[in-house]
Length: 181
Image (cartoon, rainbow, N blue to C red; front, side, top):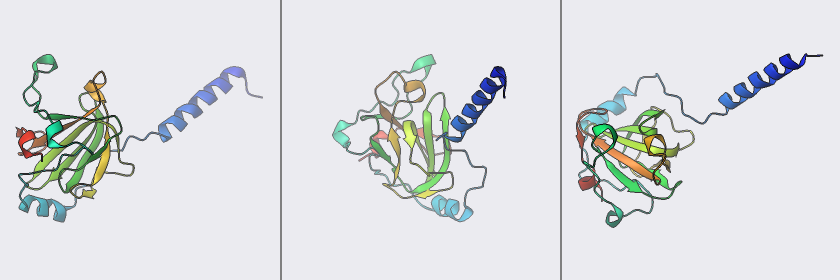
């Protein structure tokens, strides 16, 4: 018969192992991106008109939040697209999933390398599409996740923060508002 302290320790360890196995956080892949697809995207041009990546939102529902003040002296580098939690988010472009992660600022995020190459940042997601992983090639309009308020947006209304970068991941940020149609 197990002594009570050992039984408690065993149950605690078992619960931790079960909870970690049930995590839905996608794991970052260390595999290189498919060279042929990266080359193809590099040779393509970014469309000057991109679809609004949140289901049911049209141009009249958007507010240009570019440059608005944020905490710690930051300026807003993207657009916040307001929608109820759980609303589907779609890729605004075709491209490669290059990063899926959780971070303090954006919460659950997705980075997609698109044509040009352009880099598309989807933040504050409630979740990623089940099975989505780094290296997946997505088409424009393909379902990728759900609107939420994760990261530093946990005390705000659910929304998608969409960022557009033209000089690499996190570099050359531009206002995405004029692109969205």
